[in-house]
Image (cartoon, rainbow over all chains, first blue to last red; front, side):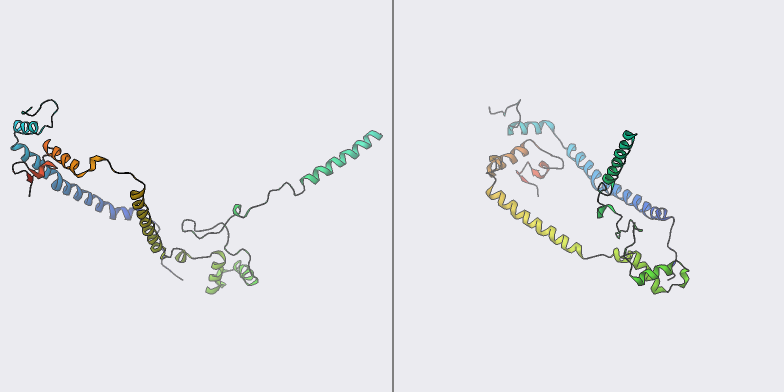
Length: 76
Length: 169
């Protein structure tokens, strides 16, 4: 009938000391992963697209396809 | 003299009738649910009342013995006293059960039933879809999206090869 006295104090502190570093670490990892997995490739994709972008050529192609309301294709 | 005596008689009768009115008929009946109750809950470790309310003679004598020195009680007597006061121990009340299996089974079954209902509804209740969902119309929509260069960097039109008029490999 003689059990050891259970832990009565410091329960929240113990939990925080264990979980907070893990939480901060995981958040940091998530942020770094997002930066190098999503935002950097996206910035590169946009840079590469606009390096070889000819706006006038694209405009004429769209005009011929007939998607504009203010300009008609050259045939009509 | 006569009037005061008559008044005293009336006065006495008035008092006796008011006592009659109060005698037991104006009190509300006490319902069971209004009295303190016993229940095994982890959040409420000391319930309002003992579990066993009507003690048998053995239990009553044990309760008398409890009033003395507790060191004189044997282990069995201590356990008997515990069981008088409480129904289940913390270990017993916190036991896990297999109820979750039935719950999950019920959830899946009802979701399946709902799916069947929805299928029937789609076939027999709803009318035809709009013409904008016909394959030819969808083809024209797709062509228009490519013509106006929707999402040309990372999205839709980025996957179309405009030179060779086909999807990029």
